[in-house]
Image 1 (cartoon, rainbow, N blue to C red):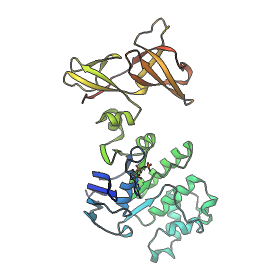
Image 2: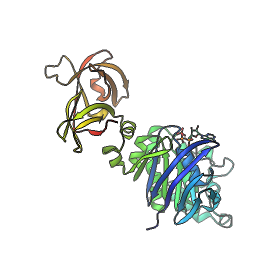
Image 3: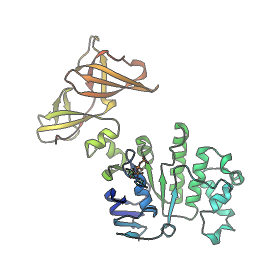
Image 4: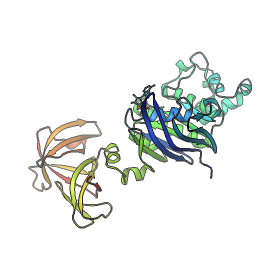
Length: 349
Ligand SMILES: Nc1ncnc2c1ncn2[C@@H]1O[C@H](COP(=O)(O)OP(=O)(O)OP(=O)(O)O)[C@@H](O)[C@H]1O
């Protein structure tokens, strides 16, 4: 099967600053999220694929056609890609129908009524919206129209650059799901740039975790979360704390939190253990059944549905725990810290 998008050894930068450091990625179908912290190069990657940044090395192939070969690039408009920028970038002086029709080749624009109606249905907007102007739409509706415009010419791949970042939390989730449904219905694969791990894990079929211009891991959301390939992936996704430990019998490691079972067996020796915030349990030191490592609460971030409690073990390590909103300790409280479930081990070096 020809991949929708194939990237090999892609390098790009600005002047003498190199940003992308040899990226490889294959997208067969569905949504691939490019997830990474601010400044790691996500937008530069998307713009290199789109044709707005000229790579210095590598290849980009869209549905079997090479659009970048080393320093030679095909013009953006010939690449057969759809592009949805962060803020939708709809034309304010055109109504929804003409915004969507703008995505079509010139010759098809004048007779675009049926395609516009089809696109509105695809992105789950009522047909009456065709006559509205962008300022008469909510942020989520504007993003759906931007997607409709990108999908109108039937691209094999759509590039989405943080398309939900300006929407509030509840709208973001609904719009995200609607966008994925529309992409699937249109049979278009997508690259979705985001720095939001929840968005990447919940919407994507494949996640590429990017840091400092390189991919640390490309895998399914479940594999990225449960079997991170690198300690930086573990700490970025799910706020895992890294603790020094020693594998003692292939299946367990001793550390400041006690003897912890390992998710995968490994040779005895020094390791770093990734303990996720939701695995860490905190009990008052005064509780009659209190066991676990003694610690002090450093600070608390309260979110309503839960809270992140940072504790410092008496042995010196700091950890982040996620606790229910009903049992949040106070800074300075003495507590006991335990771990539920198995942990992932990385080599100590
Ligand atoms: N036009 C430019 N000229 C020079 N340097 C740039 C330019 N655009 C981006 N950079 C630099 O390239 C690096 C990668 O930027 P990029 O915008 O690709 O990151 P990002 O992961 O998309 O970040 P964010 O999540 O904040 O949007 C950053 O260090 C940035 O300062």
